[in-house]
Length: 154
Image (cartoon, rainbow, N blue to C red; front, side):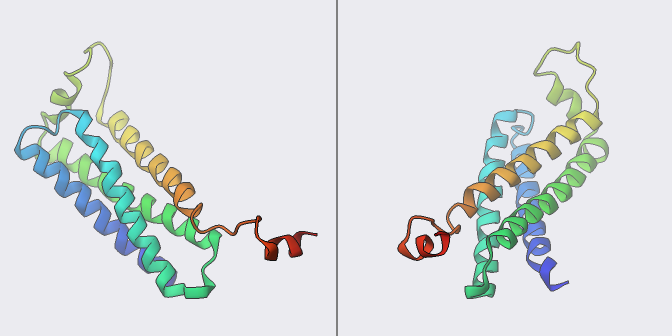
């Protein structure tokens, strides 16, 4: 259970920040414009970086690339699942007209329902998590260009 503490905690924090940002946008009527979802990536990036820093601080010299990678990815998955649940509740229960407002920005001959929208949001969250995990872990992988590494490869 200790291995899931950081991913769960930071996943909840990231999802809460994403939901708060979405609700702030909805106050101003900007939540139907998808361009503002770009900032979701910034929220996710900051949250995942903070989770990685917390994990690295707790592990010290025992920090492993694979564990850091999986931590980032699982944290992103947790945040995405929680946010998708929130978004689904918002779009179906709190503001049932939201999906029509969102879709009306594009051609209406597409048969788009809430399932497709939630799937798209989940896919964006999962892909953001994997890309950020790959990018962040480049900072922590061992270099092969050092004298010490060359001794072990020959």
